[in-house]
Length: 273
Image 1 (cartoon, rainbow, N blue to C red):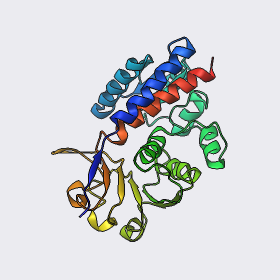
Image 2 (image 1 turned 180 degrees about the vertical axis):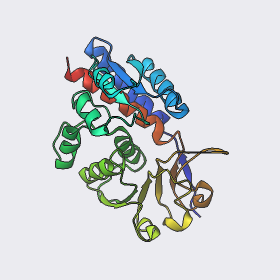
Image 3 (image 1 turned 45 degrees about the vertical axis):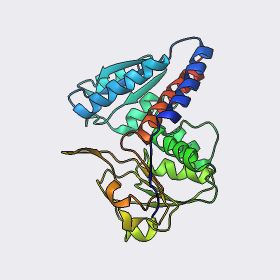
């Protein structure tokens, strides 16, 4: 039986935040990020408060803004002065997310969703702004395993904010990457071959012991609210004693994602100075 370690990202995130503080000191001013949300959504509101607290701790001015009630007013809001702009889901249904990305612009994009940033990543061009959760996964993997060269990695989930950019970032690290998704037939036949499984579907308990090989490393990016509290994609009870490492939910990849978002805000401010 394998001894299973539960990984938390606090130490890694703190090292990233110390570097962020040094960059802000060198910048000589306080970076500003406009954070848009629908405060009626409890999850978005709670996340925004946590993010604003983390931003303040390193010297970033995170200004929370309520989504306007019309497309015209929201377009004006998104173009207001700021180093960076973030938009939290759920977004208003009267505006297209691609238009939102265009209005924010590549320079102020902190989510890696502008076509110029996503395109640079796809083409392997240096200087793209990375999607924060995807970059956090790469950093966590490197923290746990060192070099990723040659590792067999299965990414479960193909969203444009996690799965797709993550697969490209892993290819940059010379990992061998398989991407699975909702239409994948016999998911376990793919995941059982993996050294590392990264699951980002939001399906509680999707990955169980019969999905993994002995000694696999599991990164859980899914967060699902249940009556028992927050759970992830990985059935922790099932994989205990078979997986070598499982990231905590929500304190595994989560703190590192927040630090990566803060890094992107500082990078946006640096680019405008």
